[in-house]
Image (cartoon, rainbow, N blue to C red):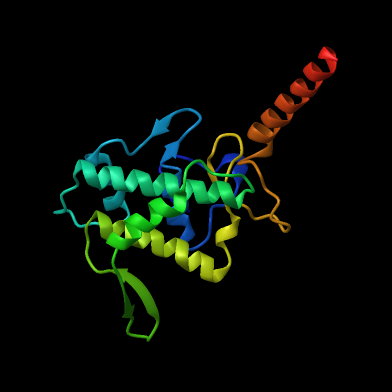
Length: 193
């Protein structure tokens, strides 16, 4: 069973595959529409990272670590917005490049000769490096384009559709809401004429 942090995928969607699942969980740690954010303090960030074994128990997480992590989360959400065909707020690439310069990864080989990317340290920057490595790996694998932010609520979802046309986390909630708003807007415009 996939880890959800208490959030099930809307509409019974399947979660993102592989290392992209960590990115999806990170993005969805802030559920924008209802305003639920599970990472608002350094302690909550440490707990979130510890549950995924991304930092050691002895690591100290400070306010500036929290600010960097949240900047990465929202910059990645901006890229997911772009994957959905919309224009993100701000410049997510600049924000990600600033953090990526601090994040240090190294190539490591397992006993069977399989290469992996590992953080060079076990602090918050190392954890962010793992998340960014998941993005880079998914880009190489060709799965990155399918991680999108819902056009209505900005929930990160993985578009499993054949034609990659998914726009909403779930049609039954956000899709219907968006279509109803568009319908009312068209009818108001027609009434004014």
